[in-house]
Image 1 (cartoon, rainbow, N blue to C red):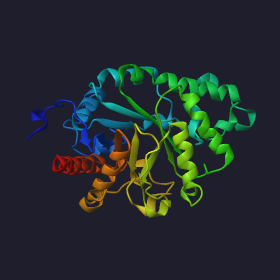
Image 2: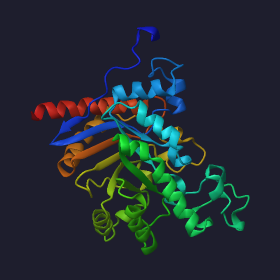
Image 3: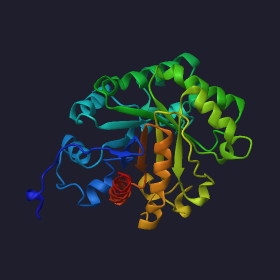
Image 4: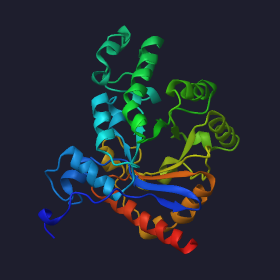
Length: 322
């Protein structure tokens, strides 16, 4: 079939129903250059941004926007997502790195907030939240959450993802930081991915789960390389949302600073590895009314291929249960 014969999109993809829950499967990006430029997954190389989103939404009912981690989203961009997405489609938005303890390039800051940086950070390649006065940092939080208004108003916002770095370890200051999340978000649903294995050690795991439950924050379950030290904790800390992010199992590139984001997660799951997740997804569906399963192995078409395979497996499981 030629590109000209392929439709740009069909109807919007429907989520699955499993164990009484709504299960959405998708990927952590729909615009990665390796997917757009190095594969034929999109039927045309010259598609507009709106056409790509429409095509993606005809295949999967959820996506994670990861560009918002690198720089805060412009309100007009978020508005275009809300206007172009079909009813029922769901966006998870990755929080701006400044808000999760990561370093960001100064050029990505709002101009007036950039001016508030302390003198010691002038000329730094990356700046952190502690380089800003408290009022400027709180303003950054307010602007980030306000930028998501078009998605909340249209009903397209799933959750805001807060991915904390490995140095965000279980100590009082960081638990206090998590405790501030609900107030800063003003009612937006949030999920939390903890990249330090220390949160999952004996004595800390139950305390972490209890804190997330108390705060109404959804734990992000991870499928990650053994080198990460991160276990698969099949728990839901909210009764309305469980999230899984699949990072692949490439040990060699997990901590690499040389590889691109797509290169770090260059891993294609086998049928057997995905099949192991069918009962795990069912377990989460028994714990939460909404389940998001997101492939972060977004190298070329690996993520969309594995997402489609997982959809088929879960659909077969659901059919057998009917």
